[in-house]
Image (cartoon, rainbow, N blue to C red):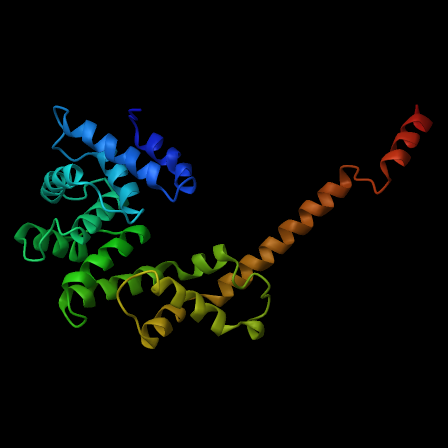
Length: 255
């Protein structure tokens, strides 16, 4: 079996449940070995990264031939940078580091990691593997950790109101007096827990302070009005409370 698209690799994830992922992992390894023999086998790309990211999620140790190939690919990855690869790129680098294929003293890696923290614009999914790399080589009080922590607090603060609305945490609140601060703080703490770096109470309070309760209440009110309008429109379209048999009898009575 030779799969050719990132999507085809992802679609086979259902195989993980069959034998704890062993067959799926073996399949991914065979794909990598096939790729290693191709003309551009040593160059990192989106397809290879999807395979590598999926393999990294299984917490299994690849065979020696695959490890040798990963050592080549990670050098290519560090030279190229994340570009438009996204989360798959960072998951692979994290896995390669965990396998001992990247040294914490590698100048290219250190420079890249610093760029990922200070310069690279990250989305939510990318914060997670980057935080694991930072924790692995950094101390809590150093510039990388402090900067990443600051960025994530700002990231959550900017979108906290929309996130709370989308998560439905306060969807039953229609008055400011009913606002439950603990529900918001617990949600923020759960988001912090997704990263490997530590956050404190001050960080939680800062993010919670950016949550616009009035906007949430307005959103809840608008949603309730929309639901009421939909219900009224449904009734106006001829909704009937008759049973099926009564509805049939009524149809013949009118015919």
